[in-house]
Amino acid sequence: MRVTEASLLDFNIEGDDHHLTLTDGSNWFVNPRDMPILAKWTPSTHIAVDCCEDNSFFPYKLTNQEANISVLAMKID
Image (cartoon, rainbow, N blue to C red):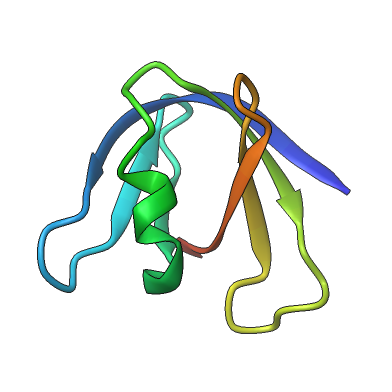
């Protein structure tokens, strides 16, 4: 189920701080296993956010719309 669509505003992949911020103001912690994928994304990449029910710790899938590649994430309040 599609939750939202936004563009990638900023991301940090230094050390244990694997998070990104979308232009809608939402903040996400990305599965550390997906960091090599996220490292190739650029600011302004168009992102689709979907529920991902098959992974309870990372319940969302963030998809790079241009490359059709996804990472798993949890929303940070």
